[in-house]
Length: 291
Picture (cartoon, rainbow, N blue to C red):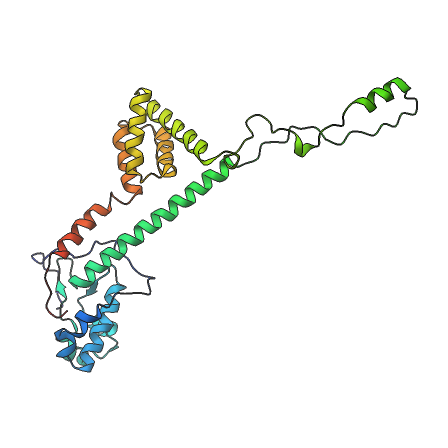
């Protein structure tokens, strides 16, 4: 199995950026594994080497693949430098692996499950990034305004020559309200002081205004456009608000197409399309030899 890559071989079965290093879990598919020829017709050494190579392939890049060199395979199969012992079990240990055009060996079942796991990993990381960005923006809106109120504690009157009329007038005046009881300054109201419906209505109005500014459409058309985008965003106003904010900053030539592409990317419907197509192709494959 050594030698240059065969360009007539099939294309790699998992994408080149499929990286699952750091995952401590790999699906075993015990029923298919222990009822197939890999378990029933192998020796103990062959089966042990096969399982070691499955786990090694899960942690390679691309995941689900192995190198072709015998010395590297012997090390991954836990034979160390004993290449001769490795070659005695190689045929059974590599049962199910296919040589592809990039010069690596791919296992169809492992490649399919690794691609699925990588799609979930990318989506989870995108959600974490979006949550961090929303938290950063929320903290920016929560910054307290500067204190414009005077010192609530009145200065003590030290004059000893106060006449009775002024003293009586001061007694008749009500005491100044404490600082905590004073109404907030204009514009100091925050999101937590408003009911959820009012907050959502305010956000929708802001997004409709942004959509109208980007596309030049009227209020009714802009509202319909925002409704379509909210459906694409899974009714997540924070995600759509972030996309519209970026669009207002970047000012793309075709704002509608730009917003749609950004929403698909943030919701996992963009770059993962090729991976989903690859997964659908593998789902149509019947039971494979050796698994």
